[in-house]
Length: 202
Image 1 (tube, rainbow, N blue to C red):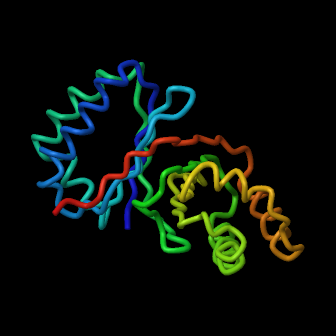
Image 2: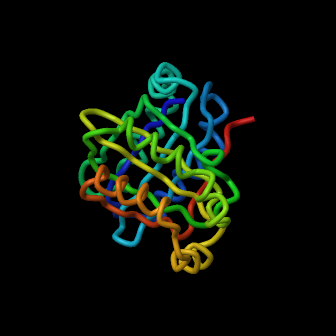
């Protein structure tokens, strides 16, 4: 799997929603290799989209389509300033990966010195997290460039996520979380309170 992360500050929310709806209806059908997208507007006006493709080549082919270019020329006018694109060739799915059943998604971004160890820790923690945090439907961890990472966690609901944050964590799991926290460094958190979950085209 390959994930392209698109991120920018929104100046025209209504216009952006219209553009995203139009992409789903008119542009998505021709996006060969498109596996789905998680997107949403966060509290500070930041829009984030995690577009999943079968491969980097599939993402490139989509970007080169004339209809994609025309759509983006209109869509980028809904943003304030430049929009960032992060191409992530290394993608890990845990607890089943992302879920279109989620009603709350939290995105974490930062830089790490050891992405491989982060993936190992997620794998080790998965069985216990599944038991302790039933509201977590799954997640993805993708990396780009020199240690950049984007992690997305999918929840059944925000209220259940906040409630289960209070659960007492066993010592062995806490040690894994603490090590992961050190590896994650300075983290930027983005909450999608009403995520738009676009499935793969039919």
